[in-house]
Amino acid sequence: MISSMTTLDSDACICGKDMVLLPFSEHFDAMVCTACATQHFKSKPGLSVREFSYNDHNEKYSEQGYLYGRELRWSHRMLIKFDWRGRRTLEIGCFNGFFVSELMHLGADAHGVDVNEQALLVGRDSFGLEGRLHANLEKAAQQGLFDDVICIDVLEHLENPDIFLAQVSTLLNPNGRVFIAGPTVERRFFDKSDYPPHHKWRFSRLGLSQFLRRGGFSPQNEFVQYDGMLLLRNALGKWLNGPQKKEFYGDITVTPPSTEKGLVGVLYSAVSKIGTFVFTMLRIPYCSAVLVATKIDRG
Image (cartoon, rainbow, N blue to C red):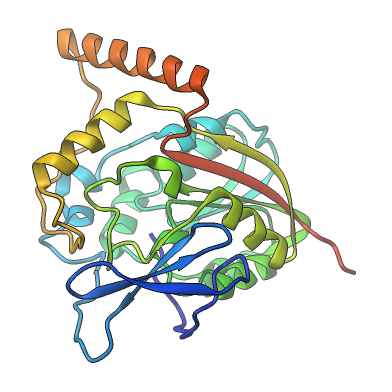
């Protein structure tokens, strides 16, 4: 992930419309957009709230099994379908660089950025990415302009997506592409980590589309995930964790990314395929989206 680089206190939504204030949890209020349903979590006035750190030794992004994992999610599998041959590509929020490595195998001249220093060390060593993984956007910019910038599960962690998108635009060639992927408010039930201060936003697809237009991009494609198994997992997780749990600081035991095998794997795959088929037929979106947009050449 990449952390917030600048703090801007604003009650405006990413779509440009005003938001209304609603109580959410002990330490946070939710700003909710009445136009696009996007939510922005803000700490309550006068309260001291512990920030989420991606380098703490007691949270999910620092566990050894997770640090060395290659977790190809739905959004990664969608992006693999594009032609990356000869494309100069930057993944922001690359973690240990496993997808940077995947893009290189697909013919891209790929680089990555992340604030998790431990993950970058693992990626440079394990995936042979020395010189391709950078700790900030400034170092990535020294590599020159890019044809594509990929942001998977990044925007929801940032305090100011507007400022971030402006920075992304400066990294792109004219008519360059940006790929925005992540969970959306349409997911019905939320993952155990989809809460503040870990996540600062819950976007809607409409909000993200307007956000890209406001930032000087022309949306080209939108892909929506339909996954019944994820709905079941998160619904059960919500019940097990308790409805009162509305904040996440990384204090959980994380199962490293893995592929289920044997009978468990067969059952998991079958339930997932059935659920996905039903959700797709009923057009019930869950749980993530990928938006592709092209930078508008104003020159």
